[in-house]
Image (cartoon, rainbow, N blue to C red):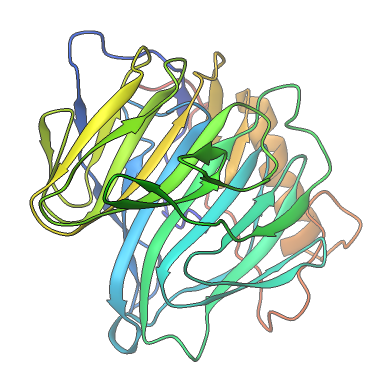
Length: 324
């Protein structure tokens, strides 16, 4: 998914945790995806007080949306650098096309993983069979030694596991007997948890990981803290397990990883390491694709979309610099 904000904020992200709180609750902000019938997403990462959870650097939560009212998802070809996109749906279906020639459907319970590396472009459109759209779009920042690799695409379907009364579908890494062989470049875990009403489960986690738990539905507590729907509970490293209690049927997304240990610069759909690097990414997209379409350039071209690619927003009038 593209970041379609008209004035995207540059973020320099570190991995410093808050040491004075056992559970930090991060509130979402609404971000429209553009157009008069824009689908709105709820974004919990990045934000000024926290921008990374392990390598996870972007969390958009959307739906359930009635596509007849919201217009669904129609994101034209747009670029990415230095990251992986992780697409995970609860309801609906999205058509994915990218500049390495991939054409795949995103369906509930199936992982679409796109590694941008040095540069890729892709489009995302909800299909005509979709009446309700509901899911999460996630980004993972690639570490410095991997961020310039050639782009590629993967599709995986995890087998479900169990933690007590809860069902677990682990789409990145492994947890409770569930997992995939999805390619990652830093230690990570990503999983959907379905917790029935009245259940209390103890989720085993890696003490070297920091974690975020996003509440999609239900009334839940995480490590004793109540977490509202669409909010994200952050847990620092050093835990071997986390207790989750559900007063009603709940669906959660657990994300974790070892702290990245380096700073990243995020602006629009690019992840780089400096002002100059991000400016160069934008110039390449505008010059090679928007101004002419160079299939041999950094971002290539997307076949089969049937529309124009998405121009980059205007740059800020001052030099990009660290914020927050």
